[in-house]
Length: 430
View (cartoon, rainbow, N blue to C red):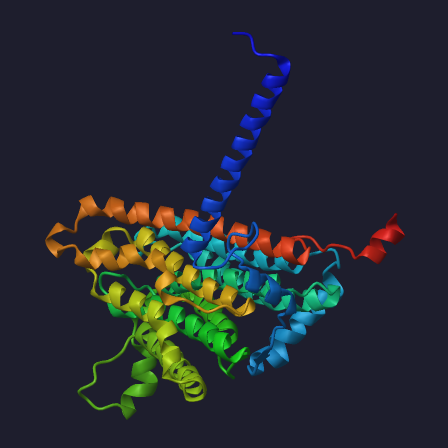
């Protein structure tokens, strides 16, 4: 049977319409699945930003205050001088932030190369502590410069706040590892000191973000982590460079200054123990003070959004310690990834005026499921699961960060690492 050309065209047109209908249905189902997965309404091509988020982000205005005397009289004037005299207006603020983070990542990589299992060395390469101390000061200075550069160039945006916050979150574990290695601590012999130096900064950072989420304002107290904490970590690294970790393992400070005031039943404390004790007192005091202020004004129900933090801390403490000892590098990077995902999502919800959903922190689920595995079954055979978990998590985070930055750039018509010229400037150049 030979079909006439007219019928062929009709058949072809019918097949094309069926294919287009199928594509529309597929896109609709995919969109519904995506929105159900994210728990949000239709977002017109945006994966992580809902319609309401997209309408609020352009209106967002940052509000913050730093009460640190070190920041007011030293760090802020230094950053202002460098921005006004040494930084071209063509440099994007996010580029400054990223350069600072690269210094810290380089220091982190060097430390892991020399201390892969966080065990002290018989011959310590002192230069790595000098480099780490310099990297911390460079990061701190550049972190103070990015906001001033944004105001100088008129490129302030919610993306800059989120990008800066994300880099600070990633940097948290790097600072903790620097403290642990610099003090000569080990996971095997000093588990509680190491836990305090790792989980303490997580808690302080999370609760500061949590406070900003509810109050709309970031207030750093007169002594805080980004200023005195980072400067103290740099000084610690320089002392280790000069005197070695043996200085922190001695009891010289306790013997010379504290022992006359202490009861006899208290054993001498190492210099490292005193450093951890002072840091933990500051962290606990700031965390309790911020939590008290928020719950007093907004009610105890606000504590529900702290559950991801405390769940992470509790699981880390009660899980089999041998697992952390066998794979310290993977374990720390896994904890860092879980912390970064939770705290950056809270900041994203803050700048987009969205609710922070505790139950959607699904990346924590495998860690909680590991609690159900009998301790007798946990061993070298299950370490591969931890590695897969960590790798998958960071792969997802890189994808998520890229997509969120891309979507906000599209929404605000800006570039992450480039200062876009306004319409008037482009006309003049043309």
